Image (tube, rainbow, N blue to C red; front, side, top):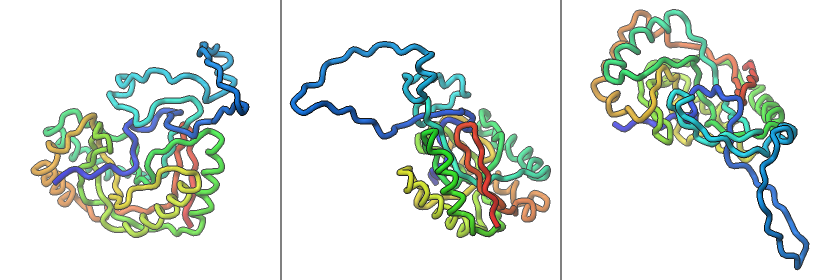
Length: 265
């Protein structure tokens, strides 16, 4: 079995960077008819001027060592904000107790696995917004999901994921009840993405809660026997059926260092 593609994560890790960049629409610079463009020499721009005009500075060199070995999906660029839409998952004490059993067992196969700092279920890929698009984007999301009801879901199937670049591997719990409701939410989020000419979600998504991650492609070590043993731990954990049932009560959008919450009805 091959690792499932990761749903909704960039390879930049826990999305703790305030700004991140990717390809944006380039501006065009016209010249008069019949006039040949003059060659120009690129001169360095003072920092004081760059601070006045976000989005004009040169890209700094990215050092993956500063991000736990993670590699950005798109390069940093001032004025571009990494944006992600998701359903937050509030971990209860019993859930963390289960994770305290699962993670050490998985680490016997891949010692470099580390626990996620927060838990959620993605409704979008990581995309890039210009700063002035953030509030209109969030308002469009609010309008789209305003009529959605809260719903219950269960995530109890252990699954191994990799991101698209295969630079990170995740151990997750896949949704087995509530998949249709998540698809309905994604449908509305995708419409907003299309309005802003952004990448929509995956066609056949596997909604899940990521529990732990590591740098690199480790799916071969984690699938097979390890995966079966992890599933056995989950299935036999005390009150796991109740423990892994949760409510989707809000949608959250994280853009750079800004968070926006949209409660469901």
